Amino acid sequence: MSDALPTLRARLDRFGVILSGLCLIHCVAGVFLVGVLGIGGGVLLDPDWHRWGLAFALVIGALTIGLGALRHGRFLPLMVGSTGLALMGGAVAVGHGTEEVVLTVIGVVLVAAAHVINIRTNACHS
Image 1 (tube, helix red, strand yellow):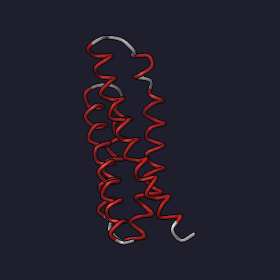
Image 2 (tube, one colour; image 1 turned 90 degrees about the vertical axis):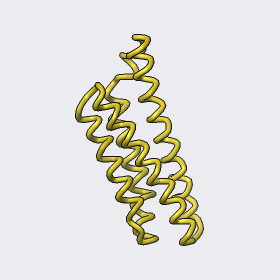
Image 3 (cartoon, helix red, strand yellow; image 1 turned 30 degrees about the vertical axis):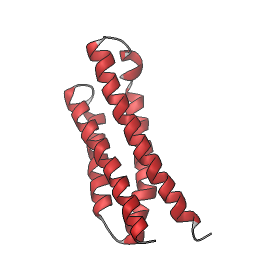
């Protein structure tokens, strides 16, 4: 049972990286499809996507990066991930436009990086 929690955290970290990648794809696809082709705006630009994505990112980040920082005592993943989540929150607050895209892209890249750092840090302390 002692191996179950680190394994679950590692899987959730990997899921966090995948979720960040999906968010990035959604953002880039939204810009391309809506901005360039003029299609899909009603679905891709629905603010609920961003709210739900941010909620999932907060939960997964807290479970993996936060608990990982408490376990291994390294706070770099927590600082990087928190910065990314704050930028993603800012993207939700500013609404659609260039600012939203920039904040979201930087935010999800930082969150994904934080998960990768956390995975590597946890592996070194196992």
